[in-house]
Image (tube, rainbow, N blue to C red; front, side):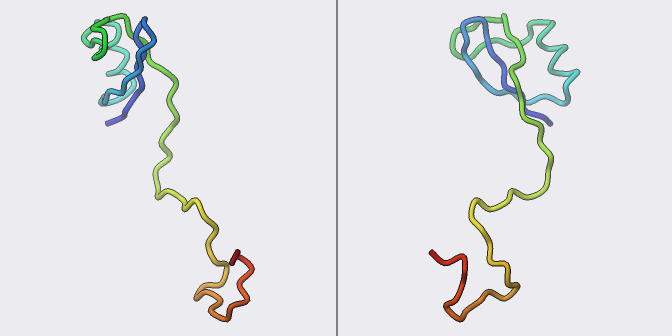
Length: 78
């Protein structure tokens, strides 16, 4: 499954899941979906960032020493 952002002609954005890109485009062309906010069936696929898999990286630096410094001389400590 893949999630795409869809945008209606009134600029409402929402997300939907599809089997793949071709599934998304076929449903858009057939007008099988509608905007949950206004009901419009004039939808287009918005820009989407690719999912590259793997685990997310932490937003903070990690200690370069495998076991941690533990001696109070850590360069990463504020």
